[in-house]
Length: 287
Image 1 (cartoon, rainbow, N blue to C red):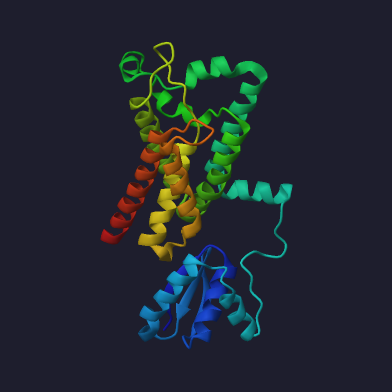
Image 2: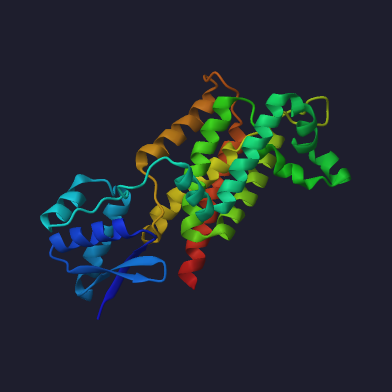
């Protein structure tokens, strides 16, 4: 009887882990179930040790020892298929697999391009955050999300969309569009509301802050904590990336950077992402 250990969305990492387990005298194989590739064990007695090895693999899947085990086994398995690369076909294929990630990406780019063509003022007038006293009267609650789509420089939007494109798609492909939608709505609302509490409005009715960075910190915290709480789900971040983002957050508070940082939005986004990951992990454990 086969004992399931971990499931992957792609075939290559599943075979890479199975080969390494076999090299460690833990008989393992890969079976396909629906659209997932499940690593299974022949012997249940090896499950605890295999879980430790799987956690190590998720933390650093590019470690040469895994490829070495595949070579020793007479197989050559790589994490990225040799045919993958930068092409219009691959971009479209990735967009289809992560449609909500792509929609947010396109909206941010569209708003930025329209701003470059002289339409920033009307866009800002309809999307920027307003004081809560005004929102309670005009009920324009979409402004809690609006600032996430506005960026003020090329560096600003490139930085945010690179992280969103990578982490948002990772969440959407693994846990589905609805989960990423929840993370986006919750983190955008909380981060923009938090920044409004620590900012002064311009001309009394608009806050001049924007960007997807609060959401970016949320998806980073979400993937980071799920990688720690539920490593078998296949979501994880290298410690170096987490460290870089946390250092960037601290530098924002130190006020030594050349740009104005929305520190409250970053912090609130990070906390909301971590809490959502904790709630999801707790809820799945109860089920």
